[in-house]
Image 1: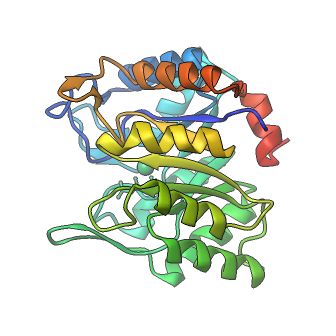
Image 2: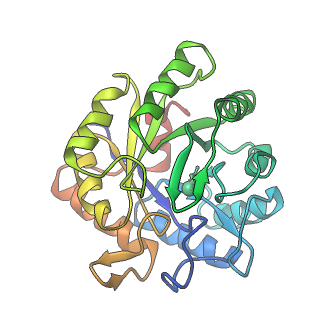
Length: 272
Ligand code: KMH
Ligand code: ZN
C-alpha cells in the first residue's frame, strides 16, 4: 500500500473557540497549530483563515500572511487553501486564495444543505469556473464530496475535459444532510471513484475515528482536525490538532501503514 497522507484541517470556518478554546484564529495561532500538526505527521494543511476576532475570511492578503507564517516554520508542508470559505460567502470572495498559486486547493463539487436554512451553494457553473481557474494556475484540486452524486459529477467533468489533473477526492462524511458515516457508505464512495484516483476521508464529530481508521485499512488517506471534530474522546476536548494527528499516526503504525512526508505525498498526488 502507498504511504498514508495525513491532512490537518486545523481551523475550519464555522468552528469557534466557544466549541473548543484551542481553535486557532490569529496568524500566530494558525501557524503554531500547522507546525505542530506537521511535526506530528501531517503533510497537508487544509487552510481556512480568520480575522483576529475569529470571523472567517477568504482575503488573499490574510491567506498570504498565514501561508508565509506557516512556511517559515515548516517550509516543505503542502498548503491547501479552502475555496469553500464559509456558508454565505460570494464566489468572488471564495476564489481569492487561488490568486496565490498554492499547490492544491479544495473544489467543492455540489450544493448541499448544512441544516436549518443553511445551504452551501456550488452550482455547476461555479464548479467549472473554480476548476478552470485551478487548472490555469497549476493548482491541484482536492474534490470535496459530501454525497455520492458529487463523485459522479466530478467524473463527468473529467470525461468532458474540464477536470484534467489526477483525481483526488475527499469524502466528507456524517454532515447533517450529506452522506452518513457508516462502513457501508464509505465502501460505496470508495467503489465509486475511478481505479487510479486517490481519496482522503474526513468524517465529522464522533464519526471521525471509525471512518478514518477504515480509510487507513482501505489504502486511503485521512483528514483530521478541528474543522471536523473538536473532541478527542466523548466529552473530552482535544488540546490541539496534534492530538488527532498523533492518534492517526499511532493507528496507522499499528495497521502497518507508514506515514508520508510532504514530498512523498506530492509524488502520490502527482505534484512531483
Ligand atoms: N466551510 C464550508 C462552507 C472547503 O473547505 O472547501 C466549506 C468547506 C469546504 O469547508
Ligand atoms: Zn474546509
